[in-house]
Image (tube, rainbow, N blue to C red; front, top):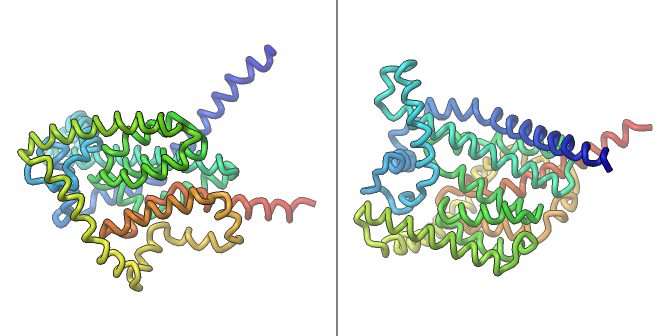
Length: 346
């Protein structure tokens, strides 16, 4: 009994050390390419990035209603930018009074948040039976996507929404109520389209939290979101009803998205979501990864499909499927790993 009591702290310490190592790998694979994106991106033609930079400065007037309420990442970036300005004043005095410190803060925050999502993808893969090596390699391959570099390096807020999807998927895989609650609380503040993920959580997240629990947290999250929106509308002198009209306007993108999706260019764009890692799924029978994901994975794909239809950014929205895709890729690598081991062993 004494030996068991001594062993548990050691096992727990190793577990956290392993998770810290995986998180460090995620940060490492993102930081370099994302830094290049941060330095060389042409912000002059990007309305999204200029809008979020304005939100970080507390400027809500003349900002698109689509982006105005997504304040969590800009707020954290603004807080991080404050000490960074001191460093900039010493290293790059000509940049200290410009937007460079704030852009750097977005790069730091988005890289760390997206890496946290990657860690949850790893943990989700482990819940589905993938080996540690396969789960880590699959996470790194998915984080090598062009969209990961885009999300981590630019002043946008997609990293938080990626984390929301990662939390929701991990909650269903591990039955973690903490992950489910975090997903519900952050979701509406990350993006309004979180409403499409809610039915999926209610159906497949019941082992993490039954309907009464989920509905109670959804009510609290909704109240916080409405209060924040009311305050922002007051700052921007915009009627509250404007956000409703803006949300309905997104349905006008369905026809355009469908025509783009069914084109050759659209197929190539979809391939860019996960790149050549997609071809790895062809190396083993589909049942190896499709059967474990089951209806939950298929339904999550449908949720992502709705996001794609309502947005003109098809591949960028397709990247939201990363939690399930990482599991599929990790299971493929695990199967190949076991096949090689069985052939090498006598």
